[in-house]
Length: 616
Image (cartoon, rainbow, N blue to C red):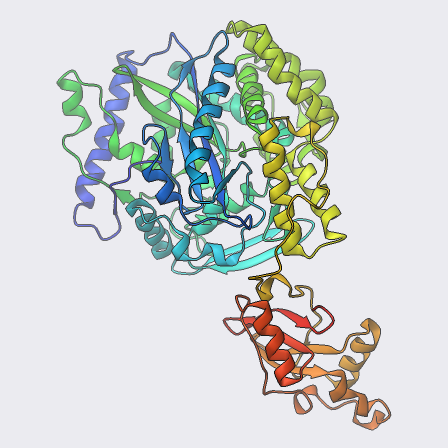
């Protein structure tokens, strides 16, 4: 999660001190590499587990800070949103039954969190994006009151100078503006760490890039956001846009998103990689420093490279390089950031094992992979996987191959060999990699969620479908079976209570609207074609300015000479409107009292839905 005690760098009088520390960290890193000080005769793996907190209605809870007060800070830490928490686990050596040991420890820590959450009528859900997140959960009151998050939000919004634009197009389309980085809080991931030999950095990192697309394709678990079907792994697009410091026209030297895959094969050393990060991305934060890294080295102390880590903590490569120390020795590790949380811990450990096995099982024919595959194909593979999941096709070894065939015929055998080369217990390898095989042959998390959501939509409104879907995810997770064994929702996993309903949960999102300068003939035709009796009218700024009802226009049916008239002269301007948080019963009373059959729902002068008497 990064350093908590931070200040904004922009306009900071101590900016010069920070930059000196950053340059000293780079120099210290060079010296440690030159003097062969890095630990490289051992390989360790570690994990970070992010998870969502939900209330009794299966919507995001707002109490992560309260739960954290009762949890062990050695393992549990906050996240950006008040409905997320994270577990940081100690790394273990890559050998024997390390994966099942990590699995048992993870389950134990999640059980601890569940016990505390129960005191607050809260439940834990493992999923890449919580289906029930709505726009109201992305306001500042849902941001965790930790200085790091507030400062980071200020720094990014100050550099952008504009609201953050979010545009993701999949089966549906989402196009929103937001004034904070809280959309990042929608994402929950399962981050896997692998310690690597810094002397083989470029070769190792490039291989991690090459396998990223195929690995992601079988692990996708985040197809829904605010009730829209988007990418199979929507987190990839969402995270990139939520913390983007670029305006729509690129500013200064930042030509790529801080969250990204990269634009070329890695070259040179670990130091070159970090130098490139400093060149490409401006530093956003600073912190307090007791001494500099060069002085620490001269005193025989391994430095923490504090300034470099602060900078690195705000550059979110999907394969991120990290520096750390273990037992007084420096190490370099690779952090896999693209794996989503859930659907179950066995699925997550299987995903991690598949990735680690491939990292360790690279065949010799893929040495110097930068000379054998085009980087643009590798990058295309990654985004194809994010968009299409198991339906993706990849350019691999200069051939086009399906995700299904590539994983079953090439990558799974490769992963087995890699794990066995590290003396991982065969029982462990077979147990978890079997999960990957069954998933390829049946269904993964994102596909299960899409099919479940579509099934529920046959009988329920969108908001109710999302709640039932989330309740189903929770119920299935408690049983511990991997996703390939899950049945689709029945529909009775959660009985939506009738009390305390909001009008926003009943509104129609798909509306037919007209512009105030449209002709009566056009709008009459639209109403007859679609058999609708209410048309909201918008101005050129897309603000709601009127409403046209069938009662208003029916008298013109037999007066074709008036059909060229614009509807602004006919529409109702004195409108009764409500916001989406209005209680359902109150909205009903408003409609009955005013004898109206259509109630527009408006937020910030923008029409977001309507409710008619028929809906109620």
